[in-house]
Length: 406
Image: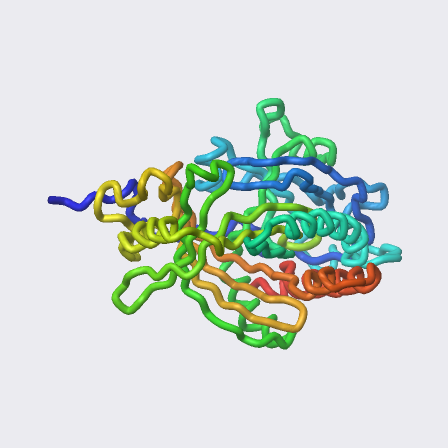
């Protein structure tokens, strides 16, 4: 008899698509920023969970003296199969058409640096969001809640809404008011050349130490006792090719999301304050159900997500847990006294939609700032300085410019 395989599609020979992020955009130094913030409060959106008092903002760095988008910034449709399958249209990205270093040297009175202005706009939101999160952490009892401040790098994609389709958007003359009416997502799949330059060039230059390389399989489960959450089972592979479950947690909850379109850089920036609950008080029956489900999985590098369940029905357990997705990630981690740098290759498969995605990602966990905020009597000025220093490092070393993308 043929073994039952969940609806994975076999890998194509060309698994990695070239990233659409332009690699020729030149850095400029402009002082203006849009200080007006787009703020919304959300609870749940598909796989993404927002706290009740979550804050979401977007603004652009690199506007002209009148706080308008410069004429060399325009919108361009990008062909991304994974995204188009969900939205049924090509998303738009902001593109800088200046291609020579001489063109980028604009005369400006720069009273403040971009990282100073970004820090000013993030600082108060971070403190207020963390204060709310701290109260929620105190109310969790025996469950461990871990706060995380992360800086993600990628390119913002703008998607249409039923009330505003992308066909009606003026792509040559970019208007802030129009962009605010569109949906937005971060496309974090960076070019291979950028990943190589981060590891081979930036890491030695900034003096971070190699911490570890982790090969992890994450099995995502629905739990009928937690309809608003996803259970994440973190596993590594034993010598017999079986999975070993080493941690169970819930999917992260977003408390603050601040998106910055960096018009003079090749990549954009997302700062997120999140929390993740580690489940440490599971009953014996719950743990046995999870281990039974995990042990029935088979590691198969030819499957999207890297796992399969050979026997029909084994992708669920007792009617309570059901596999809804699998991730296989290989991550190199580097550390300094103030942050952790992660360079990750990810292979993801979503059982619910039948979609798969492989990405290269670079992000930073700003652990020093989180530790400082948690200190009793932490001073606001000290936190602001740490935030500014971190943003300067990200701006100078991690947001793409030609010397890192060849």
